[in-house]
Image (cartoon, rainbow over all chains, first blue to last red; front, top):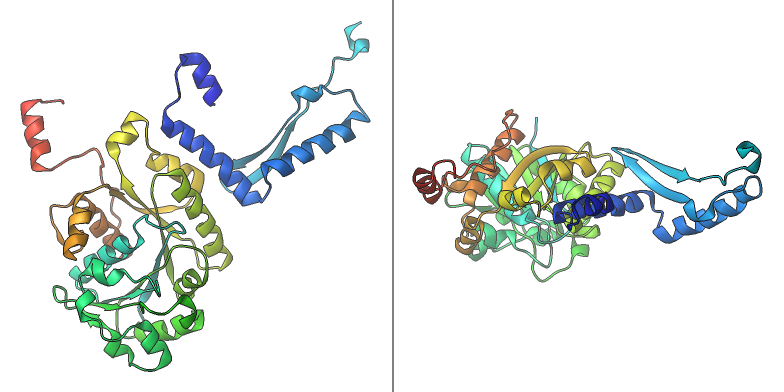
Length: 88
Length: 266
């Protein structure tokens, strides 16, 4: 969100927005009791497991916790490497 | 039917729990309800000074718990509002002098004698908070539009829910409308968006709060104070009225009105 704002306007986002974004993130970790360090470890192990079955773009993997009102979820975005077979 | 026991808490210190307790109590008492406040902050009492009753303390909550004084003897009657009483905290003891079951027992004894019991919780989530929460029928969580205060409020919401105390209500204190407008302060909607909780009141930043605590007179008794109006509104909502939230952009002070006359639309 902030990055987008920065790119579009070339300015610092209002501190109100920064506060809200930081708050959301810290509350997700507080509520789920999953620290950023644990999330990082989970990501590494997930990459290791998935790599056994499909070729993935390791640098593009994005794992995060999200929160919608009372519901938390773990969202993993794992880009696959382009398969040579499909390109043909 | 007995009194409603209201607990005012926040997690974080310095957000305005004691000021909120004193003002809601004064506003309810001014509406002719009989109100007993209990200072739950054993060892760091402050509600007595904010209410202007510090010179009249003889017995305190710990005396009542230990049986040295009767409940009646520890209830200090407010001079301005004859329906308002304070049971002060002990200053020289620590929180372990009172237990959650002591608080339940004391409140049960008071329930038949008044309309509202308002407990000012200490900051934190330890014994003092547990004491203040134990007898509660309604929990009010005070926060400020700041990351740390909202984070702590979220933690308290979780603890209150796990104690099955019913849904707590939120008071957002010390809002500066001009800073929100400038994009430099979390707005009411921002806070509600992340906390997902019932909002019972919003209180604008008001210098009169300092003046009121200097004098030991809650601003809820000052007709002209904006924060006082906000606290009176909260008291009316607690009593069951359905009132709209106050308009924080509206400035009805003399200077603001004069300013508008000189610069219309400014």
